[in-house]
Length: 471
Ligand code: FAD
Ligand code: MLT
Ligand code: ZN
Image (cartoon, rainbow, N blue to C red):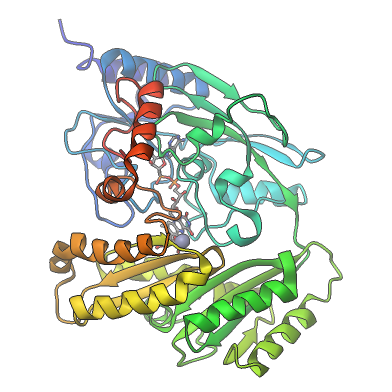
């Protein structure tokens, strides 16, 4: 008689139907690679349940058969957290068929959505109700709410609205043993003990499977200004950020830093995009919103930027004159990742340090990198308003990109040592996955690691949820 693990595929077929259990190599191909092309695994099967009940039955069957599950949403993650290992034993649990918007409660300013709804679809549903769901990422057309919550995604509006975890009021989770925890509450105040939903948010599929969530909505912006400023260096970018916060208050939604090198890389691969302030070493991209339709926002931003240029804080600035121009400025910024992917592999860091420490961090790390890896190319950009930079290191000209990856551990230590010295974090928004597991073990205090392991053991005692990720 075949053992239970060997019969898991037929048990999964019985739960979700044959059409939603993929096993042929061509069918599973898109689920066993990551977006950056850094990881490749194999899988026993990809199962695509359509309801919370089916997710529950899938988890229970896998627990019974001692088969590990790898939850997956849009598969846009940056740390290999949704890629199965090479054993061929793990089952990929794709949530993409769970894409119902269960309801909008306009008076409560909440939306209840299933895990597989794309971020763009949630934004669209909120807009149709005259409200705003503010989470915003370059990957929003493909990434899912389940993935956003499980990675505690950040993006370009954190400065004003916070990370994904700040936008969640309730959550529905399937546990490792298949039981369903319905925590779909729409409450802004609830002090009835531990806030369990926050345990699952940011746990990268290692503690439970998110099947639905109640998300908080906000007043929709009726006036928006997008501006690009050129600055002499990162210290001036931080000074500009302080000046804009002072002048604009919480109308300042996003403040992104882009190096001249990163901007030109984006244009190299998207030559149709503009170059409105050519030839500067650093740029800041600002988004300013107001929920009042008649707010004199353009004049306010123009005045604040003119003052910054007059004071020598910024060198030059330009304001988008149309929605299309604004979109093209954002495309310059949002396409950097895609441009880097086309250039070939690079060593990516997603770091945060206190905003005040960013200029010294950037100068010191650039000097140390130049010393240790002469000619290495830095592609630096990110969410300066949150103290979060993507500090990417690519091979020197003439060195094969793949060969440079052999230096990853040394490059990581060089960058992360400076992050830790500045009281920062080695993962600001992308998570740990498999990419930064060794770095986490190296830098996280032993007591914190022990507490994390105890939480993992309590919720997933047999280690069947996304093994080999995070811890
Ligand atoms: P996946 O990649 O499928 O999975 C990510 C992790 O979540 C894995 O650990 C997986 O196991 C787990 N998971 C997925 N769904 C569930 C579920 N339902 N239940 C439990 N676990 C689950 N990230 C940012 O934070 N900020 C950015 O600005 C940003 N910009 C990006 C731009 C581009 C062009 C790209 C390609 C990516 C970007 N990302 C960014 C990274 C990525 O989009 C986010 O991490 C996103 O939240 C991942 O969502 P996903 O649905 O693709 O998740
Ligand atoms: C971004 O801010 O564009 C993303 O986090 C993706 C990346 O770092 O490549
Ligand atoms: Zn980012």
